Every structure is written in C-alpha cells, then in structure tokens.
Length: 463
Ligand code: NAD
Image (cartoon, rainbow, N blue to C red; front, top):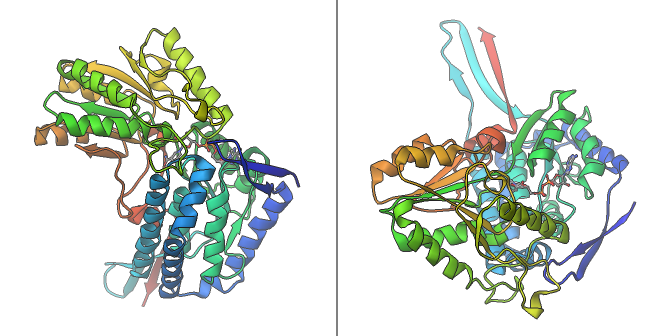
C-alpha cells in the first residue's frame, strides 16, 4: 500500500495522510458487497426499515454539519458557506429518498381475466459509485442515498484528491446501523483501482460522476460484462441574457453562476450569451464585480471564493487561458494568478472574463472547470438558442428575460438537462439532474434517481 498526503489547497498544508487501496483491496471490497447482497441480512430489510436507516443518516449528517463543512472546506478550498449549503443539501437528499423508499411502486397491469400482471421494482445488486473532487460529500450522497433506498450493496470510490467527507459519510452510515458489507469504501487513484471496480463480474452497476474522458474509459471497461451505467459528466453551460432581462438579478447570477467555487462546478455558467444591445453595460458591470470578488481562505468569513483544487488543475486553467489569447479572444480581466502575498501558497487564479468570443474557439467549447467566463453576443431569439445548443455537452443552461412566453419557448428549445428561467443554479432533491448529449447517461435525484438503482420485474401470473 502506498501513502497519500491530502492537501489543503489554500496553503498546501497536509491535512491527512491516507493509505491508497490496491487493486486486490478493491476486489475484496466488491466481493464483500456481493456477499452482503447475496447472503446477508440487508436484502431482508423492508423498505420501511431501510428508510429508518436513511433518516438516521440524515440526522447524523445534520448533527455533524459544522465538522463536515470544515473538512469539506479544507479539503476542496470552497468557502465554508458553500460547504454548509452542501451539507444541508445532502441531509435533504437522504430524507427525500427515505420517503420515496417507503412508497410502494408496484404497478398492476390489466391483462384480462384469469391473469394477475404486476411490475415490481427490485435492487440492481452490487453498485460501484465513483465521485469527483469538486462536490465530494454531495456527489457521494446523490448516489449512496438512492442506492441504499433501493436495497443495493455498494463500493464507494471518492476522488483521491478530496476523500475526507466521504470517509466520514461512510462512518456515519455505519454508526446508523447498516449491516457489514453493505457500504464499502475504496480509497486511491482512479487509474489504479478503477479498472477492477468497473470490470469485475460481481458488479452490476457503475454510477460515475466526473470528466468525459474518464466516463468513456469506464463505459469501455464495463462493456464486457454489460453493467448498467450511469454517467454524470461535464458541461459547457450557456447563460442567455435578453435585453429585457432584470439587469441586477441577471448580473448577480451571471457572476455567481460562473465564479462560485472558482468555477469548479459542472453546471457553471461559463458561456455568457448576451443580447448585443445589452452587451456593453452588462459586461462592464460583470468586470467591475469580478474584480471585487474577495479571494481567500475558505474558512475566513469574508472570502467569497477559494483556490483551485490543485497545482495540476491550475496548470490546466492556465493552458486554457493561453489558448483563449492565442485564438484572439479579448481578455477583459484576470488571466493570471493574484498578486496578494497572502495567497501565494494556495492555488489561486483570478476571475477571468474573455470578450468577443466565437463559438469555434476552444475556450468556448472545452470544459475548463475554472474561473473563466466567455462572452458571445446575439441579436435574435433563434440565434440565442442556436448558440446555447452549440456544444457537445448538455448539462444545464439559463435564460433571462422579462417575457415569460419567450423564457418558456427558449427553455423548451435548449437541449440541456436543467434549464433555469430567470435564475441560475438551484437544484432540488425531487427534480432530476443529469445531461443530454455528452454530459452523461441517466439521471440523479428525483424518482428517476431511484429508478437507476432498480430493476423492473414483470410477474405474470396465470390464475
Ligand atoms: P475525473 O474524471 O478525473 O475523476 C472522477 C473520479 O473518477 C475520481 O474518483 C477518479 O479517481 C476516478 N477515476 C479516474 N480514472 C478512473 C478509471 N480509469 N476508472 C475508474 N475511476 C477512475 O474527474 P474530476 O477531475 O475528479 O472531476 C471533474 C469533472 O467532473 C468535470 O469534468 C466535471 O464537469 C465533472 N462533474 C460532473 C458533475 C455532474 O453532475 N454532471 C458533477 C461534478 C463534476
């Protein structure tokens, strides 16, 4: 086993040293999950009993909110307020799936006299749940809660960059009384332990959140044994602002939509598509506010944005900025590291805005996952929709207009899994989350988020 230091991206302090699992450990975890599914007590638990466990986990998460939020902040760099919102969200998600688990979803189908035809929903089996570094606790919970609610066993593999709150989550689930072998944790580098987890014949389903390339690798790895696959991948999300938009609200959300968590958000509004009449005033105000964003330690109350997660990730952001400049985009602000001597030990990067962008530029098409906003303009509604859909991704988008009908029309035409009208960013435990096109396969949250972890079984009984 090799040791791995976990680093606070604000100052590079070592906050934990953990042992990476080996491929043999990963296989042992898969087999433990298989045994717990095939021969353990868990499958005998009633949905009501499982729901009680989920509610207990929710209560434990709520009670540990301040510790969890602090760990999330020192591990990811995001502000404490953001981490607290994440904990609140995961508490609601566990409660939501506790409620959904207890509803009887069995459907009776009319098959004529002498026949009882029923469709029942059963757990898929052993699930491998792989998560990224940007929302560690939240992404793990969006998978673990419905997987447990449906009665599966699982192996959880957090990102090796930010594993701390997932370790705590698994501890809390154990504390809540889950039987041994139902929830197994594997730490370590994806390319090391991932291939075993995603190809082992004992695994029935892989649910993955992360980058497009890794998603493609996982699909290939899972193909031989035809595992069920759920993928939540990247985004290049349009934020469309019409000339009649509420200026203040639209500027405010355009700013937080792209610079929240230093832009390390899959649904970040990285592509501002603004009506040409509004362009000058809107962009000038955005630049003014972007330059006032207080960067700092996520634990400090006055910080509005933290560092990027790692040196490697900052290097990627810098490469994208260089590409943007080479392609001829106009740099309005940012485009470099901050000068503040107090920020030099962290992986900080200034909020960056590129104007006069064209749809064929790589900074407009490739996901940077950093604090970079590109600005494009439009004149007609058709053009706005066309630009909004001109991406291989399809995760999220927003439209700002005072004209309700227009807002709804544009929302219908955008090929993205979530569309906000006069808002940017909210998600709900009861509303499906996921992507069209290369943003993924399947959905998390909502009833579909539970169905991902179930098999439908039709029982046709000749009476
Ligand atoms: P990543 O793809 O590098 O890693 C994600 C996870 O996959 C990590 O746990 C990693 O260890 C693991 N992994 C890496 N190689 C693997 C392999 N060969 N087999 C199995 N597992 C492997 O992604 P990241 O850099 O951690 O996260 C950023 C990406 O996540 C961005 O592209 C972002 O858009 C995406 N994301 C999407 C959503 C969403 O809901 N759609 C949410 C958050 C993040």
